[in-house]
Length: 391
Image 1 (cartoon, rainbow, N blue to C red):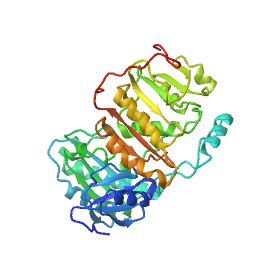
Image 2: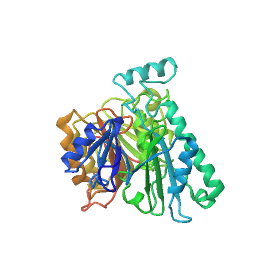
Image 3: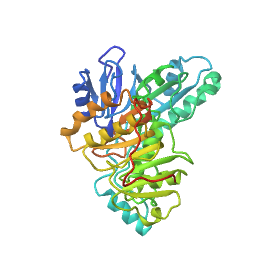
Image 4: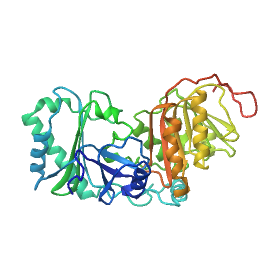
């Protein structure tokens, strides 16, 4: 389907669906047309972050090619990029992405962890194996053409998931049929300017490898948020895990070499409680305050989204954490207006920051990013129950 708007952007909906994204754009007054299930056309990249947007292809154009070699030739002809400047290449097939982790996944994961069986849950998300293989062959063929004829472009090609820099461009090919696709070339410095919409991951999809060791499937959310963020929890970092039990997020942070203050009314699993890098505080996630600034705030607590958003705003205003990963649990359409409040409430407090429904989310939206401003007024935690000293 050719773009219905001049210079149109092609948007990929979270979970391979477009209904929630279409409704979100409608609330923002953005025109959109359905291209196919999971895909929308808009006149340009939306001006506001969209929670249900997985990836954007700015100024997408339809291309057709009968073979893999023909695809490589076509792409090579369209690569008009600055000499010597770094660029990235994402070639991927149309997804059949569903929410990959179904209800009951925690219980299934716990059973697998206990029994030592293979860690697998639900259907495998992402492109079909055949189309994914074709996309990989097209990418390989294009690199062969560049090696033979345009070595300067090949030398400048970057293979990384790091955050966008002002000097980088992005070339994307979305394959929707063996002989049909959409090409988008986003030249520098645009990728860095629209980083809240343009994922560093092909198709905006990240599904962490299965791991039977964590006490819950929640670990997948934090790992995926790290990749989308382009910032990894580092050895020596200090973080607070609010509502930590049974310990999926604390497990990831401890594996990264961080020190963790885990706050919950219930203890974590015994092996985490015994970890030398963990300090457990029995208390309420919403009333506990840190004794000092920490590197990370992690919060995956089950609560009304407006309450969790208020908690995050509190922490950012007070300057209690440099970076954050926070889950907003949605109770259906009634909570969608809360997502519209996120932009207004975080806009002056965080930069960069993202709001998106992760591949690992179901009925949830994740907020992650870095604190932007120093607190307007000094706010220190008052002595009281739940206060802890240095780890």
